[in-house]
Image 1 (cartoon, rainbow, N blue to C red):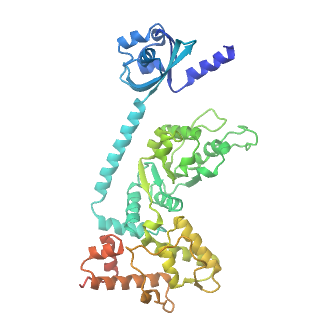
Image 2 (cartoon, one colour):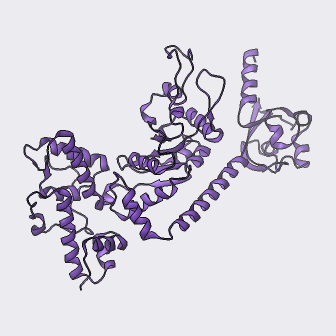
Length: 472
């Protein structure tokens, strides 16, 4: 072996996160990595002067994986408990020369810190659950407060209101939030609302799409750089996105696309609360609230080795799953109204929807969710020559409305807008008339809620709003 190869091997052994043992064919320890001392509670000198047989007899290795390889002459893997009480997973591989067992190479990975992290995560989840239970003492008052605080979020369905309530409760804390859901369901909008509800609302909201930054620029963009850090660097250096989020909220969208090296660096920032710019030697303290989002299955990425398990646990303190639009069709009317208002304001005309379009809007599958709905509406708005918006083309994903939604009868679909009636007033009139009819045909607010596919409390609030009572 050349001197270069020896130095390369030495560097690998000394800098690896795993703890290496190199053992002769008869069990004598030839070399170890430096970190093994702390894990096994024995000095390097003592280990190098011992055999694996002696260490197993002394309880330092319980059991010795090297002795298992010596016995079977095959690779092995097992769980060990060291003399210091730490749990490690160990692997060992035989090295043969001309059929003779000359060396056994073993490496072990300390699982104790990971177990502590899992325990910490479980404790956080327990405390969070208890906090939610305490927060639900006055649900009616809380729901009324939610209506007053929703700002630009359109949430009528019970599932989305529950998610909004959850975010409102956790907003005052600095706990990390992981938002899950298909593309276009509104993860960014809810992250912004969480920021507005938080104590950091006066600070910046930094929105970062991890999939949009080239990997070779990721570190400089996220962590910033010092003057002269690389060719083409700005003369005055630059603060990274993490520093720009100081005192506010950092939203990392598409977190599943974060390169492994950046995952390691982000984990260090979360743990230490500090970062080091590219080309710098000193660390800088940072203080921000972290919210991340993804449409991927992070647990599967962890299993495949593409996402760090310890980072996953750090991020997954408060997981929030936003359902697709097809599972919360009650939100579509409010989303349509808000989008039309924006389009009318942007293009300077007051257009309204033809009533026949509603069957398409309510019956579509919308695989692109809210984003696809908004794009469809803008296309319909722009292609309509008059102030009444008609369907521009057959919606590829449109299907019949689900069975649990009220079907549009010919009489209902023929209801026209009254003179000077806005879309909001029109939809409210349809809602009121639908509730009035159901109150005369169904026996209770629970039956009405089941018929409409919404919560009973939502039905009660709507009846109170319109002054309607169940008469059957």
